Structures are given as C-alpha cells and as structure tokens.
Amino acid sequence: MKQSLRFKIIVAVLLLTTLFAGLVVYILQYGISIIRSQAVETHQQILHNHIEKIDDSMEDASQFMYNIIAYNRDLLSISSYAYGSPAYVLSKIRILEQLSSNSNLYEKVSGFFVYIDEFDDLLTTGDLSNFKTRKPYLKELLASNPDQSWKVYHTDEESGFVQLLHVKDDVYLGAWMNPSAFTSNNEPNRSLLIADNGEVLIPYKEDHSLLGSIHKDIMNETFTGSASSLKDNNDYLWIGQDAQMAPFYLLTLLPEDELLHSLVIFERLTKYVPVFVGAILLFLYLFMQHQFMKPLHELMKGLRAVSMGELSIQLKYTSRPSTEFEVVAQLFNQMVRRTEELTIHVYEEKLRTQQAEYKHLQLQINPHFYTNTLNIIYNMAALQEYKPLQKLTMHLSKYFRFSLQTNRSLIHLREELEHVHNYLEIQKLRYTEDFHYDIQANDETIHYLLPPLTVLTFVENSMLHGFKKRSKEGFLIRIHAFVHDDSAILIRITDNGEGFRQEQLRALNDGLFQIEESGSGIGIWNVAKRLQMASGSAVQRIRFNNADNGGAAVEILLPKLDSLTANGGKTDV
Image (cartoon, rainbow, N blue to C red; front, side, top):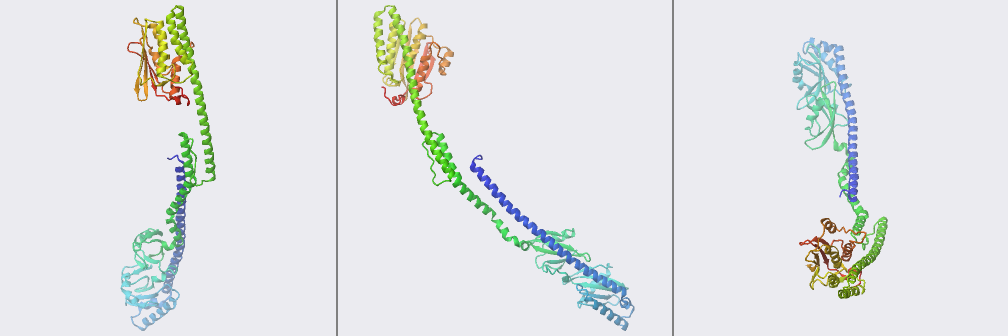
C-alpha cells in the first residue's frame, strides 16, 4: 500500500497543503507580532513624553516654591506676627497675591497653599476652595516628619499629589495637583494613574481585575506585557511608565481586538483554512482519480488479466481519458491482439512438433521389436523347429498385419493385450517348459486407450532381463488390468525373475531413464514420454517395484484418454 502511486500522490498533496496552511498561520502570527511591537513602541514613546511633562510640571512647581521661600519676606516673617494683627493680615494678602499671580504659569498645578501650624491657618490659591477639608491629612503628614518630596493623597472620594516644604518655624508652603490633569489627551479613556502601593488614582472605565498581576510586573521594572480580563474575557496589551518626581506610574491598556482590527478579516479567514485545505484535497483527489488514477487502474487491471492468460481483454474507458492514456490504451490493445495471435501460432506449432515427435518415438519401437522377433525366428530356424516356427509365423503375421494397417497414436487396451499375447506365444514356442504367462483384463478396462506397445515394452524387458535368471520352476509373467478409480485403470506387470537393484529402482522412480549406447533403456524412456504426451501432463504415471516373490513389478496408471485430444482432432480408433 505504501509503495502505490496513489498513496504517494495523496501524501505529497497533503504535505503541500499542510505546508501552505502552516505558512498562512505563520504569516498571520508574524503580522500580529509586528503590530504588537509597533503598538508597544508607539505607546511607550507617548507615555514617556507624557510622564516627562508630568515630572517637568512637578519640578517647575517645586522650583517656584523654593524661590518663594528664598525671596518672600512676608512668608519668612508671618509667624512672628500675632494672629489677626494688621501685620499678619497684610502679610497673608501679599503672600496670596504673589502665589495667585504665578499660579497661571503652572497649568498642571491645581493651586498653592500656605499652612501655619501654630495658628492652624490655611491660605489657598487656585482651585482649592474646598482644600480646608484636607487639614487632617496635613496635620497627619506633618506629624510623620516627612521629607519634602511629592506624596500621593488618596481616599475613597478623591486623589491627588501634594508637596509640603518647610519654610520657617511652623510655616509650610505647599502645592496640590489633581491626577485628572495628567490624563493623556491621546488616550483619555485608557490611561490609569496608579500609586506605587497599587491604589488606582484615576480609574479605568473597564475592568480592574487584571491590574493585580500588572502592578507586580511594574514593581519588578517590567513595563510591557499582556493580560486577560476576567470580566469580559478580552485580551489586553499594557504599557507602563513610572514617574521620577512622585511615587506613581502611568499605565495604558490596549484591547487586542481593536489593536488587531486591520487583521480581523484575515484572522477570520484563517479559521477557514482547514475547510479550504479540505476542499483543495477533495478537488485534487477527484481530479487525480478521474484523470489519472482511474485510467491507471484500468491499465493495471488489464495487465493483471494478461498475466493470468486472458489475451482477449481490451481496454475500454467509460469516459474519455487524457490523450496520453488514450494512446497507451490503443497500444496496449494492439499488443494484446498481437500477443494472442502469436500465442495461437506458437501453440499450433507446438502441437505439430509434438505430433511429429510422437510419430518419431513410435517408429523407434517398431525396429526394436522387429529385431527381437527376428532373433527368435533365427534361433528356431537354426534348431529346425518347423511346427513351432509355423505357429510363430502365424502370430508374427497377425502383429505385422496390425502394424501395417495405420500408424496410430492410440489403441484400445484390448488390442494392446492381443499384441502382447502374440509376443508371449512366440516366446512360449521358444521356451516351452520354462516359460508361462497369465493375462487378465475385464470388460471395464479393455476399452481404455493407450499408446501402442506400452505394455509390450515392459514384457520384452522382463524376457530380456528376468528370464536369464529364472528359477527352477520356470519363468512366469503376469499381466493384470483392473479399475483404479472412476477416471483411471491400473495395469500391473510382474515376473518372478531377479527384480531391480535398489539404485536402479530409485533412478527409475525419479524419472531418470538411462539410455546406453547400445540402445538399452530406450524402450522405457519412450513409453514414459509417449504417456506424458498423450495425457498432456508431466506427471510420472509408471511406478517400479520389486514383487514379494523377488521379481520385478511395474505399475502403469492409465487415465481416460480422449482420442480427439491425443491425436489433434483425428479419430484413430
């Protein structure tokens, strides 16, 4: 399966589409990372510029107050006057006038104030009309002996930044800034002012649940990152920047869905990448199946049929294939037709060759038999045994008469046994007392067909080899033919001679028929060859054994032979 062309094409297409889908996803993620990095750089610069303005405003306000302390004599001497005295009141008026005249120069400052702790008197300028409510905070701040840096003021009602500078004795000069003045004009709804203790000075309009982890990161000097809201399940990109003049930092939150708005359509399209890839795979599969795999399958089917011997097959496509496969189909059909014609021609030639070889083998039997018979006649004539010679001549004439009728390839068993009877009668006339024979065949067996001289060949070999070493009781040959099964009979030929040697038995049963230069052994090989050709099978049908009495035993398994098949369509019997 893994070596099939279909499997390799499907795997290749799947890999290519997977790589394409991976490339699309990679491009999307790369675009998102670029937009994020650009957004971080842009907002970092905005926050940096904004926090610098805040620091500059605080520093300018501090410098202004230091100048007032250094050069305003009323501020330095007011504590020496009695509370409510004309000098005290005039000093207050002049101090407030100077502070008010300069407040407009510091737009981020909500107002300046002077606090005289001894008289618990608070002087305010600018937008500090309700500042007197913060006296408890000022007293608490003074009681803690603070440094003169900017501090964060935060309650549930309001938040602010305050700086308190010691002037002289119980006189203090301070400034107040409202956090709302520090909100970025570019991102008014997304900027938060958060104290270093985590208190939110200017609340964000959205969820505050994600500020806990952000505050920890900023305290660890990590000023960029991403977080998820527990309220709306949105992802946010955050950028922070800490201030130098006060303990707070500025934080900007950017919703990623708005940040990546330009990639929303592309991001949605990537969700359909699997569907798109599946559609491509389906289209490619159907296209390859129709234009390539189906014609190739038909071609392979035709090749398998030809390999099984079906030479009548012709490729016929249900739909018109591509030009290349159409040409291949035409060439295949021509090749199969040509192969079928050549096969038929070769088969006919083989039949003619087998028939010629068969006739040649059969002709080899006749001289062999004639030679043996003439030797017997010569011996009888030499002994002047005329009456047996007359009988021998009669039996020999019957055989000659049958042999000269036609050169048949198959005869009935009855005719073969008559030949054997004539031959054995000739032998019996020669060896009257020392030779006996017994032939038995019923009506079910005598109509079977077999090549001529099949039985006689083994009878001759028994006479030639077994008779020489016969027992004192004489030499006996038995020929019995009986039914073996529904499709074959068994012809058994035995004698009481010496039998076969063991090595000779193994060679004969293995089909190793040795033909000597003198011609000895050609008869057995000839019979075996003609039986194979007549039956159309290479199966060995002759078995050689030694009989129980020590003599030789030959068994011939004779199947039912069709004379039409055996003789190429000519009836011989």
